[in-house]
Image (tube, rainbow, N blue to C red):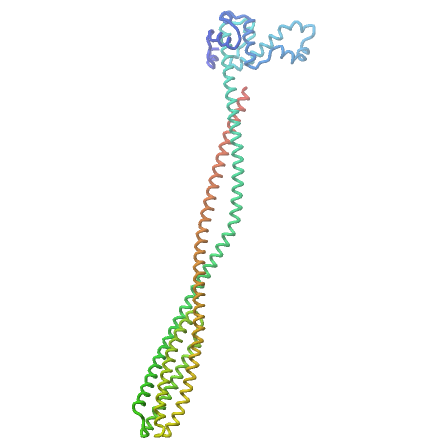
Length: 438
């Protein structure tokens, strides 16, 4: 018995009386010191409500059929008093066994002792306190489990929502992926077109270099033409100063022949210039250079006109001397014809120059406008490429950030769910153990 008392504290009699009175079980100190069957039964009966026990007569009523089968009707009246006592004893023995008092005997009811009654009542108090504490713990655990269940359901709903959001993001990724691929393809096409335009610029620069070489050659020919014109002017001036006489007829013929050759060479040079003009490219830069060449040709034509005027002056000098030399008249007629041809050629080139100047000017302005438009398109394409590249980088960064965020949230949510499940399983096992022990 002493070893069993170690499992619960022994309460003094004064405290027992006080507690029993608080439980509406009216006893006095003498009832504990000199216990009787009636008083002990009264005290133990007071624990029915607190220990959730059934009264003996109710148990007998429930088991009346079995009792009638065991006892004959003739002898059942004999046990009318013993049956409630035995039922009460079995109830108390079962409950005291739960209170760690395993030696409860029928004599503890019929012939109770002070010491054993104190031990039994202390065990009942301890058991009652333990049950109250367990009930409170169970209620607390039930509330906690309910909260945990609510949290678990909330986490399940959150997990389902996050999974739905993840699926939506994956669908958005599937939609954005072909768009990004198309954007990348367009960017590559724009880059390829830009490289092609740069190659075209390189080709145009090479052609410009070739045209500049042609212009240098034309300038050289113009210088040669200037030299020939200067020589012709000197010859004409010499004719005017010398006032050729019939004695110098041979020399005059030689000068006229040389004059014809120089005119022919000048005509050839002019034809070369016309050929060069016809061979020039129609590109924007070639038109500008051709315009400059025509300006130079206009200057040369003006020089030719001045030269023609000088030739007319020379013919006037020759005409004044026609009486002195009849042969000089024939030469004059040839010179007049050549002058008419030169005048017609001058008029033709003047008209051609005017028309070509207007056409070249219009073409040049149109080409410059086209060049500005092309440059604007190239600048717009470059800006658009840069903008697309920046947008593509932002989309990739946002997409990567979203993936990392959702991956972290999914991992965190799985960890929380696993932890919640572990806690719930532990609490469920503890509840099963407690209920099984009860």
